[in-house]
Image: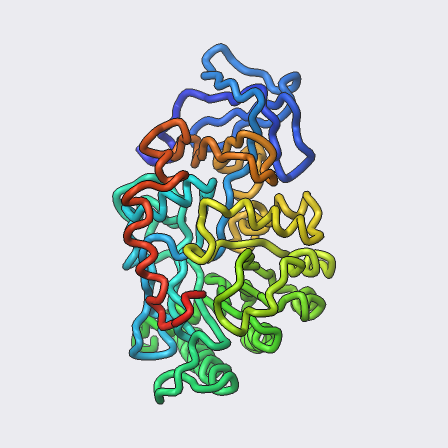
Length: 424
């Protein structure tokens, strides 16, 4: 029996305020879930319940969709090594530790879906993994694909700026050289793609199998989304140019100086996943980061969301990113979308995630109060109708509050990708 089918008896969460994100808040609402899916959501007066339903009273609580983190490093997976600047064949799923306490912290932060990245110390550091943070013993139990050998199970991580710049003969020493190396690899991938097309299914005419080229052809065909680490305004525009030249639509990750080029980002049609940190430090190229970036991007019409880059921002504090965006001018509706629906769209999973609607996955969180309040606690996290975090459970609570062993094993990986200041 699969994870999503584990819950046979329908469960109705009754009496709380429901924030579906797809519409206005619902006071005294009912959320009905079964078989891992949302069966109904609405006001108590409009949702009929059978006698067989298990009722859970959430009066005084707030329910909203599970949070979607489009850029994280939970799971202690380092990704590529220093042998080459371009490593599209590397899969982060081959190094993910599903027993890592960092996954427990993410669940405590209300995160139900996460894009786990290899590090940014490369121009192209490998394949990301899209995970549901289910509780499982093996990576295949968390992946958002069924066949990890033949399906696309995530995106592709690229980077520019200072992270991949190492003037050692293998890695680039300048921004111009960085762009040239990335472009040359995609030209090679286009040639590989043409050979496959010309073979027309004839195995004798197919090019020799190349794991790097296979992954990049998936990018060129739109099957694998590029997640492009980029901070400075000029680097952001370079990332846009590369995407436009080779016909793929990257998610622009971090965009610390996105407020400087908000119009250009919006005009490109590329989404922006923003990092928010509330203390000084880190790399020089991020020194002009502003909380106003989110609002500036939304004003120009760009799709904007936030991410943790955990451990740069602790997964337990993800909701705070949206609140800080509101403080800097982002309206409430877009703030709620920025950690739910916007992220789901960036991962091409909005048909399943990001809102509380009938037919979507039963991924949601139960809050003690308003999601934008500093006093609010995440009390429960549910994935596909199954509770994966409960603040009242002492074993779960330690991930929310901190305890010996909860953080051990994660912080030591801060510098794994060659980024000496720790900001990936």
